[in-house]
Image (cartoon, rainbow, N blue to C red; front, side, top):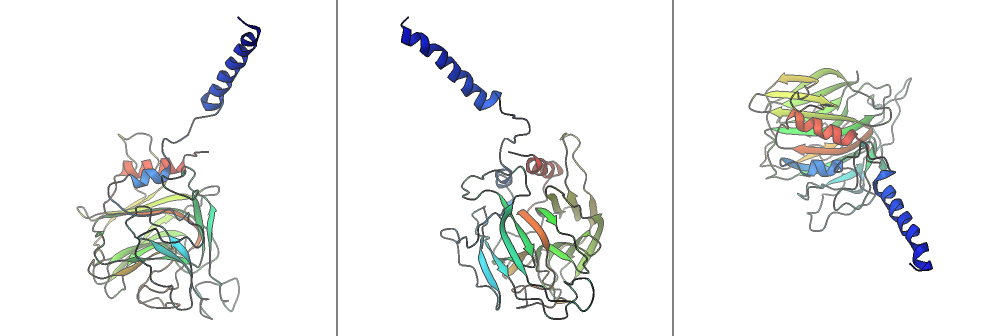
Length: 341
């Protein structure tokens, strides 16, 4: 063996050992999910729309997507809230005008009430630890800090019916002294029509679900306290199964055993009327309980921003046209709650 080869042998061996250490031996691998959270959601067959809310400011519409309506009068659009399913349920980030003088919905301590300057802070630090870079995504996972702003989503006629549905999201509310509801998601029409549903947090920090029966809305107070994630977000899901009429609320449904699936935090049989699919309507994330009883700040019938905003962080909002099984919800939570870093 030549002198040169003699010296190269230990160097080659060292490089092999170092490479093995780099790819697996020396790096911790426990807790790493096999697939990013967003890809888990996108693989669900009944998925209708998925808004990760990781968009940058002024993100354009995806190529070929239909144009969105302009922001309501007096409001400012900040770009597209992209629907990752590519089914073109894209939304717009909107900052509405000031709340009207004298409103008691957003106040500081003492009297009289003060006006509040709405805002949206995009591309904030992710509250879904298990989310990685989804296939085809250009942005790292992130969330939106809602401060009275909202996402407006035109739901066109002919969209998939939500006779059965699942709504899920990751949230991290910012608690203050309030006397109003914080709407996380609203897929509903006016009280006169009474169709659809909305998920919000009431003034007692309890989860609240408004369900239309075709003529009016029933406000269901679940008496489940809205959890506060100190260092991460909280997973929340609402399901409705038309075969049983059962409405269920799920909070962080962890389960390591598929033979004993998790149970819902709240269940109740109710009459639910899905939104008429022959007419367009607007869905909301972060605000927009668009019933007639609420005074809109801009335009009526869902196009404006009624006085029921949300304060805090929201991320990874998904909508399905089926009632997902408890094991599916548990899998979603576990994939999202497991750090991939």
